[in-house]
Image (cartoon, rainbow, N blue to C red; front, side, top):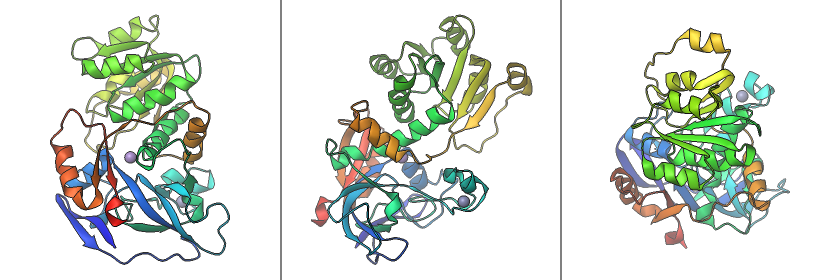
Length: 342
Ligand code: MN
Ligand code: ZN
C-alpha cells in the first residue's frame, strides 16, 4: 500500500509499505478516507517540530472506515466510519495513573513519534476508534481532532460561565478555541494582528476584539474587563513575547494557558505570577476529548461543516504541502483524500 513519509526535514516521499495486519492489541483495521494537514504536520515536514523523529509517516487527523475487526471487538464493526485517537500512552506511569495519558512519560503520538495516517490502512486498538456522526462528511470530520485540542485547553483552564476570557491569536487554533469557549462562557476577548480574523471572531461570538498592531493589549483588556484583567488567558499565538503579555493582561487569581512548542527562551518575571497568584498551565494534545467533541456535534452545539477549503489526493501530498507553503489566503483546512485507491 502507499504512504506519505517524511524521510528527513524537507524531503517528502510516496513510499510502498506493508499493509498492516490486526493483532490482539491493534484489533481494528481502518481504511483511511480523509487525513487533515495540520500546522504540526507542516512543522514536521520542515524540521521545526522538536517532538518528531524521522523517517515518519505523518498525519494525526485520521478518518476512515473500519475494514476488518479482530475477535474481541464489540464497539465497532466493518463499515463503521471512525476517527482515530492520535494519542497512545503506556497506562502505568505517573501521568497515566492519574488519568492524564496525554502527557504519558512514554507518550507516542501517531504521525509524530510513531507512524500516522497518511497511508491507506492502519491497525489500531478498538478503544482508539470513535464513531462519526452521520451529519458530518469524512473530510469535515478531520476537524474533530483540532476541536479536541480546543476542548482540552478550555478544560485545563477550568473555563466557567462568569470568566472573562482572553484568546490571544485567532488563527486555526484560536478560532477553534473560540468555537468551544463560547459554549462555556459569554465574555470573550480575541486579540490578533489581522483585522479580517478579528471580524470573523466577532461574528463567531467574541464580545470584544483587539488588534495588537494598533492597540495596546494590556490596556485594552483592562478596559474590557472593568479594570481587572482577564480571568483566563489562552495563548493560541505562541509567539516569543505572548507569555509575558498574557501574564500582564491576566488579572489577580487568573489562569494563563500555554500551548506553544517553541524551545526558544523567553523572558518572564516571577513577580507577575506571584503577586497575582496566577496559575500558569500547559495544555497539550487532548485527554479523552473525542467523545466530548462528538457529543457536542450530536447535541447540535457544534457544527464542523464547511471548514475544509481544499482537498488533494494522498498521492499528491507534495503538491498539497507546496500549496501550504504558498500561504495562499484562501487556505483554511486542507484534507488529503483517498478516493484514488477505490
Ligand atoms: Mn491537528
Ligand atoms: Zn504512561
